[in-house]
Image (cartoon, rainbow, N blue to C red; front, top):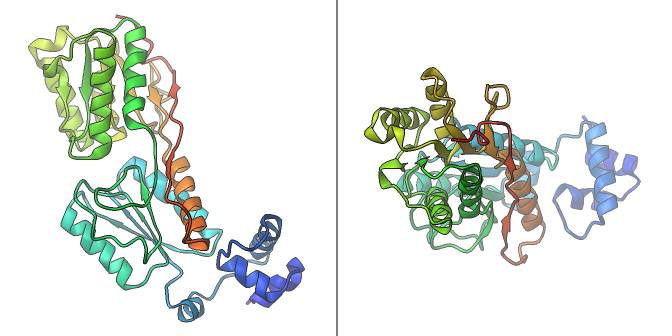
Length: 329
């Protein structure tokens, strides 16, 4: 079994320096850190988690609490976080809240009880003043949390929705349906605001009968678009804006099954096979993988230096034009 002293010798550094790299100490120079980490990988060095926990008084693991591990967006986030944390010898413990405020608090408290080194959290819509980021480093994913000041990694959801709807308007659409999640979720609320904002700014009415903001699953989104297509408003709308990947996975099959690919479509979040359909699906690229990497990097930085100023880091989100969003009425 490779020991830390073996890593230090192979990398040409002292045992203390190798130990600092292992513990994400910010005092190690970037080039030295890179060399030591590369040596750890080449020697297949596996840190002794138990020994590290006993020395530090905390587990080396990172807690990660999301809405649902089945959600395609969060599954991408989880995968990238696990990959990033593995490079630092930190396993990731994942749990789901299913949007239940009480369950979220219970899950987080269980992780804190086992003294995880840090916490990544996709918060529910409730108050989070019970969190103590001063005791356990915390990074919020995809949205801020009411009642707590902590690092946030997300996109500008309002602007992303505005951009998507504006894209459809520029291609001649004036009646655009909306299918998204409940506005109790901050990201969904912001996206609905962006939808309304874009229509209003371009002098177009917001037709409330075309808004379906209660689709928290793909099945509910499929039902919502089906109801819209069957309603008296079916002849009114010529485009659909999907505010979540889950919604898109429900809407697109219905449009294809009903031979209504004449309806323009733009969704937030890419998904598998979106570029293989006819027409291929135009999306606002909200990459779960990119968000996961950014969140992991920020938590690693905060573990190394807990005094870092709290930051709200917004990642870019750009429209990928593939055909479905460029159909004209």
